[in-house]
Structure formats: C-alpha cells, structure tokens
Length: 469
Image 1 (cartoon, rainbow, N blue to C red):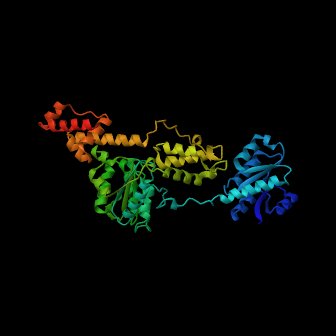
Image 2 (cartoon, helix red, strand yellow):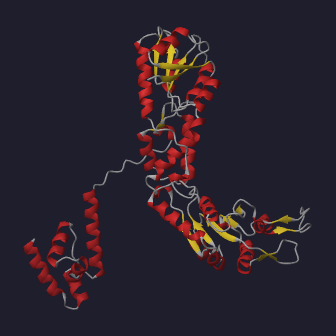
Image 3 (cartoon, rainbow, N blue to C red):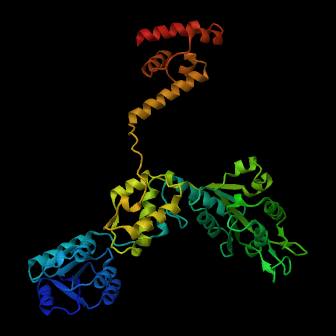
C-alpha cells in the first residue's frame, strides 16, 4: 500500500523520488517551509523528509523549526557526512527530528527510518484542541470539588437571587459568574464586570452609578454607570471586599429599592439587575472587624459558592497543565511533546498559592524556556518540595485509632465503660488498645473524685482486662 511522505527540499532529487516510489512511498514535494505548512494543514501527513542544505544557516534552521513543530508529523532529516559536528544542526535534529539518514540516501536505511516514523505516528492519537469537555461550563476540571461547583452553578442559574462567590485569588471566580449568567434567563442581556479594587475610591461611586454633566470637575458629559449598563442583565462586582464604606451604603440602597441615582441627577432610575459578587477577602471576618457592612453582606450572600483552591483539586493539576500546554506550546522555539513525569510530580507537590492563574503562567513560561522535547521540573522553576518522610497507611490508621480513643476518654471523664460503649467495643478491648497505644489512665484519686466513688467498678474491670491482655 502506498504511503505519503512530505519531501521538503529546495530542489527535489529525481532519483530519490523514483526510489521512494519503488519502495511504496508517494513523495509530495514542497520547496519552501510556507508551502509545507499549507500542505500539512490540508492533509493528514504523518511523515516528513527534510533535506538540510550543506551550508545550513541558523536562519534556515529556524524557518524549518516553525514548520516542523507539529507533533502529528514525524520528520526524518537528510544530511551529508560531517554535518552532525555542527552543534546547531545536531541540536535541531535532536529537538525536531524523529531520525536522520546520511548521504548516500538511496538504501534500506532510508526506507526503514520512514517506515518506523510512519508506524509510530499511526499509533499517536489525533490532536484534540482544548474543549470545554475537559470539564463543564467552559471550565477545565473533573475533580469532585469541581463537580460539586458545576452542580451548584446549575442551581444558581435558575433563579435571580444574588450570588456571592468566595475563593482565593486565581481560582476563576469571574468564570463562575459568567457561567451562571450564560445559563440564566438573562443570557441575551449584558454581563457587566467591575473590579472594585482596581478603581480609586473617589471614582468608584461615579463608575457604578454614573454622573450627569457638570456633576463634578471634569464631568464634561453624562456618563452611564456600570449598574445601569447591566439593565436586564448581570452585574459582577469583583473584589467586593475592598469596596469603601461610603460606596457600600449606596450599593445597599440600590439592592433594597432597585433604583439608582446618577451623581448630579435629580431623580431615581429603576434598574433590573442580577448581582453576583466575589472576593478573596474573608467577609465574615471583615464584618466582625467593622470593615464591611453586615446588612450589605446579608443582601449579597443569599446564595454562596466557594471556588476550590487548586491544591485541593487533585488530578485537575495535570489536566490544567496539559490544557495550558496545548494553548501555548506554539510560543516556544522547540517542538514540545508534553510534560515529563518529574514535572507532573513537582506540580502535584506544589501548593499553588496563586492557583490556576499561577499554574497557567508557570506552564507558559516553561514553554518558552524549555530546551528539550518535554517540559521538565527544572523548566517549571518550582521550589523543591520538602523531603518529608512518607507516611504508611498502617501509621495513618494507628494514629486515627489513638485519636478516637483519646477523644472518647476525654468526653467521658476517663470512665472506660462509657468510652467503650461510644466506641462500640468492650471495656477489655478498650483497655488492651490503650495499652498498645501507650495511653495512660487518669490518676485513680482524680477519677474517684470526679466519679463520686464509681471508679472502683472501672478499676476492677481494668484489672480483669489487664489479666486478659
């Protein structure tokens, strides 16, 4: 069966084309890298054959590299004797070529290299562009915390009640707000977002409510505020925890009455807006400290969602890293094939204080800085994880058992019969476990004083249990 090979060379060698045809290959010639790229976009070409000029320059190698970064095609390079002594050419072959053959080319070595490249390329799954199917609602994530978030988004979307989204910086709170809007009855109306922390306090009120011409120095014309712009749609107030107190009072009045008044205006304006707010600030603590109005807090937090931090999302770390790589791998100078196993381990052990935003930026930086086929842990530049001693399952179980016994004893004033009943075991078994876990009993005098003389029966049971043990 005839197979296709993309042959990239300034001038094709007729003998080579004839030899390939006799060996079952159809050679499709491209005299430039631009033509080669167009041919690869139109056809599913699995094998490429590139002839490197004898005096190959770094500019020529860079042009070829741009064409050969596609992972779907395996490339074989044709070189002349001695070319691999050139460091640029040897690095180019290592980074972008599956194999290479040295002149003379018309032999079984070339046929074997092309056949091997075609066979391995056939095993590779076709490239799949990043899609929302990696998660739901336009977000990437399949972990249980994300599945729970998806279900709560669906519930919030069917109502017009205010939603508050809590979560650390970089977790994707605006994505969640947009997902709620896009699944609500307001989807055809505007989604207006404003970052309350990015606007100076003196300008925030005018930005939210708008102003009339001449309302203050510099107000040369009427301006419609963000709230009014979101009429019949959704208003997303990001970083609401940083809103100044004077703005909080005016926002509360809008939420209560459904009307606004532009600065310098002389009458109320009715506005129908669904409000979604978010912040990384602990609003409960802010209310306790007097930094945030409690009445506004209760108006905003009718429905509450919590964005899970990346460190609690398990396998989503690898999923997001591969997603980021698929988006930005064209930014690098080399043809990247993926993430190495040590890179995955490093990312899994890192706490990601900046969450998803930090991970995406980390992968994008590694794409540019990497020097091999795979992104490694060193390319990511993450701090080394502390070499904490591994904990076995048996040790975890033993600690849990010890903690449960200690807590039961404390709750029942070290009365073994009551503690054993709570734990669902006999007093003899409890005493044996206490002995095995080196848990000391409360002094007898103290127990007697606390139990009003009931210690004798327990002491007798402990002596009996000790003899059994």
